Each structure stands twice: as C-alpha cells, then as structure tokens.
Length: 232
Ligand SMILES: NC(=O)c1ccc[n+]([C@@H]2O[C@H](COP(=O)([O-])OP(=O)(O)OC[C@H]3O[C@@H](n4cnc5c(N)ncnc54)[C@H](OP(=O)(O)O)[C@@H]3O)[C@@H](O)[C@H]2O)c1
Image (cartoon, rainbow, N blue to C red; front, side, top):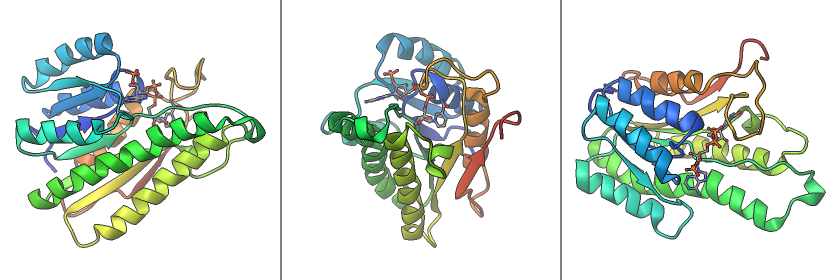
C-alpha cells in the first residue's frame, strides 16, 4: 500500500526497534501514532514524527491496563477516520531456567507479548475490513522458530505470536487485509542487556517492516526471518 499519509500505529515505540519503525514510517510520509509508556522519550519522538507529518502523535499508556488497547484504537479512528497499519512491536523478555520461571513473570510476559497484540488485532481488524485495506505487522523473533535455553517463556510467547498470525491469515484469506510476522534475530537494543556488536541495528528491522507494508495490494509477506549477516 502507499505509505504516504497512511495511518500507522506502532506499539513499544518509545525506544529500540519500535522507535526506529515509527521514524522509518514517518520518513515515508505516514501519519504515525507511536505508543509506549515513557512520556519523556515519547515527547522527543513526537517532535521528530511531526517534522515529517504534522498529524502524528504519541500515546503514553501501559497497554496491559484494562481497555487500554481498545481505547487506543478507538481514539485513532475517531481522530483520523481510519487505521491502515498496526505494528505490534511492544514486548519484554525474561531469562530464567524453566524450573525457576515465576508464574507472575510468565503471565506478564504472555500478556504483553501475546495478549496485547491479540487485543489490538481484534480492534483493528473490523476497521481494516471496512476500509477493505490494512496490514498488521507482528514483531516476533527468531525465538518463534527455535528454542533458546534459559528463555523458555520468551520462546513460548513468540511461538504463540507466530501461531496467532498464521491462524489470523487463514481467517483473512481472500480479503485485502493481511498480516506479516517478522522474525528478527539479535538486534542491538536494551531488551537483552548488553548487546552483541555483531547484532543488527533497529533500523534494519524497521526497513523490513516498511518493505512488508509497502508492497502492492496484490501481495503480502506472511513471514520474514531477518538475520544479521555476521551471525546468521
Ligand atoms: N532486541 C532484540 O534482539 C530483538 C530480537 C527479535 C525480536 N525482538 C522483539 O522486538 C520488540 C521490541 O524489542 P526491543 O529490543 O526494541 O525492546 P526495548 O528496547 O526493550 O523496547 C520495548 C518497548 O516495548 C514497550 N513496552 C514494554 N512493555 C509495555 C507495556 N506494558 N505497555 C506499553 N509498552 C510497553 C517499551 O515501552 P517503555 O520503554 O515506554 O516502557 C518499549 O518501547 C519486542 O517484541 C522484542 O521481543 C527484539
């Protein structure tokens, strides 16, 4: 779809991959709604986004709160009359051997990494079906495709996100609305602690998201595994 003036919601946009994705869509001329929790980081981002598109804005909220996802999509549709692209990027990671995973950590991780994308998808799809166009891009991980010792909760959440996307695409078969699951390998952000210098940059993932969203309506990327040249 044409990204010029497209209304794009990016979650987890205050930093890391989400911030790079928000800025990359803005550079394409999109009207970006960037969601995260840290108001100071979002304020700086909003200035940068508005330089590219004056209608862009940021939304500081914890998406795990009751009704937060529903209200966010509702306010976008009220303000702009549409939602063209949803990027489910917000996510967290925890590291612990399986015997030591605390149930409250497991539930929080599954809530942010899987339930929030589900709730946003449930809100966005009726809007996109009505428009007869739309793209959902879920930022999973290569952990959706393999097991990583010490990260079983994270792997389970990303496998779940991939499975959710595959099933949603079956439900969307024959419609112009489609979903992409993007599975990046290691990226230099704060999520996993000190990064590997050979990992990818957030901008590499952002470029892949823009590529997937910007294809013509005749085609879509269902799944993309993105690996660092030096590690892949
Ligand atoms: N980095 C990697 O190596 C890598 C590789 C593959 C996939 N991924 C995936 O890429 C996505 C982004 O990761 P990242 O590395 O950019 O992580 P990051 O730098 O830690 O950023 C995470 C983002 O998610 C937001 N977030 C977390 N919990 C939230 C909540 N409850 N409500 C709203 N926003 C929330 C954070 O907002 P605040 O900062 O405002 O709290 C932040 O903007 C994640 O889904 C991750 O699993 C990362």
